[in-house]
Image (cartoon, rainbow, N blue to C red; front, side):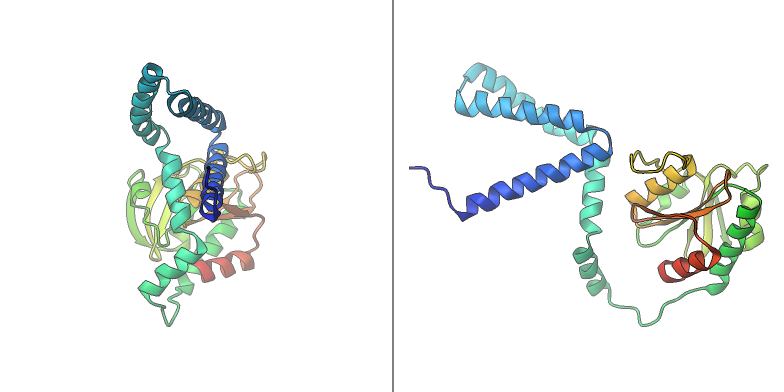
Length: 254
């Protein structure tokens, strides 16, 4: 007689939740059709190998399954990386990491650096000069910095504005800030394909969203079309920031 208990219910729910979470990741990267094809192949494989016990076709599909796992890891390496990042960035797990690291008694906030960033963004906004500034936090951005020009300079309003001056060769890339210093400029960021991003937002905003989805970095954008200031953080946008809003967020999060 078939024994069905509480463990089986938990098992089914865990598998269902896992499949749903994978589907959401695939949908965000526009790979849901591939995910549907994989599920169909798994269903056919189960029926052929386990239910009907077709030896020849089952053996072929078993071999495809063993090779297919490696192929899927290669094909969906970005999605797998994002899955483990989201798992590690989960609120409870982050609290556990802070417990092991210990709590800092004081916040080390360099208000001179914060105000230099705020004033530079306000000036660039008024002049409709496009800019993209990424602030490294706990996730290292060395690979992003390698795509641009190393600078390693203290933050200053004049230097920020010169980097994003329209005739500057570094104007179109992103500037990476680490430990209150400009680490690199002219950097290339991953672009988000999230369908929820408003259509009026351009490539800079998609790049800001992309880095915020793949790391815990903050990304500040100055729009070249409107001069408005936005910030991407944890895969979400804060739009139309004032100088006070920008100063407050940077003071709390940097």
